[in-house]
Image 1 (tube, rainbow, N blue to C red):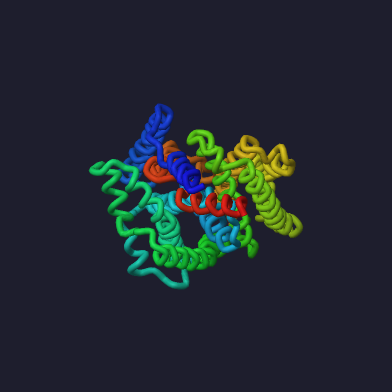
Image 2 (image 1 turned 90 degrees about the vertical axis):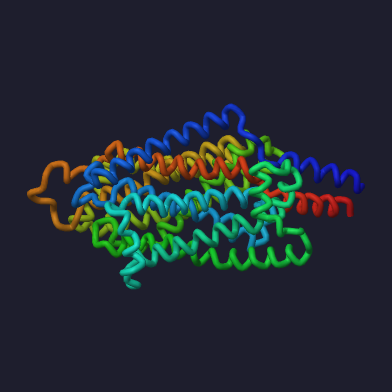
Length: 440
């Protein structure tokens, strides 16, 4: 029996150790690097010539950059959903998903911070936020909660990784840069009962802390809009609206990553069809919840039909933004619900398709939250140039936005190359316990 357990442990370790990039991995990494470099060049032009290179003007002063910021902040909530909520609820089946969720959260929050600095016309004045920040401003609270959320997410990624670092040190050739990195990060971990006890306690404390911080980050971000007196933003529904949407896009990002890692890293034994089935059900629930808040967000102003709100709604439902609006609603919510309601739709590939649709729909939804509202101020636009009445991002804006998305994917790509994406030690413990129960 002991011999079979040793073999099982060796097999799990072999299956879950990080793998070197193959040909496809190198091409994927090269493409992401090129996109990032193009984005960096576009940002160099923006620094050199100022925000004039963008198509943002007096009215649309928040464009695709802030859309990207809201998208990154939203998808980062997945860390608290999968790691904190599931762990505190003692949901054992989520173990293979926790690290996927946390690395998505960390990469997203990193680029949410970066894209805000990009949006500033004078990034060298960023320090003024700390020197002259006003505590009554939602902006300073956004900085506080984003920073807090980032550090908690880093710790929630690092502490559960410690037992795996010991395994990685043992399996990596001494003297290589990876061996030195692993030893630097985890050589103090001996795997004693006391260390495991302290680690579990620390993780539970962080899980409790991250939930209110995660809710705060999306609530405060929604306040940045709701406290700005504009049609479409003048809403008390925005906090719940943002949080429900963040849960949905975060879950969509996780099921997309689950399928990709399962397929290309051959993790079928660890990320099973049961995981897709259960995550599919969760995604349906979250999509229905977000759809409900969307109905609230548009139906109440539609009943009132104030003149400014009327123009805003007409632009969304039947005007120049209607194609994007109905695409975001149908592709981002309704079609995924119809796919995932049925058991056959909760197989790995349909769940992956639904996840991709949710993520794409969510990005366009964030664009629609920002741009149409700014083009319909309460005071009518009069005696302004024609280009002030319309907004479409310049190539520099597109390049920077795509570069930030590629950058987030690059962090995930390098992480998977260096560390196991499915926790090795936790998987070994769970499988050993399940075998012991079966034997009993």
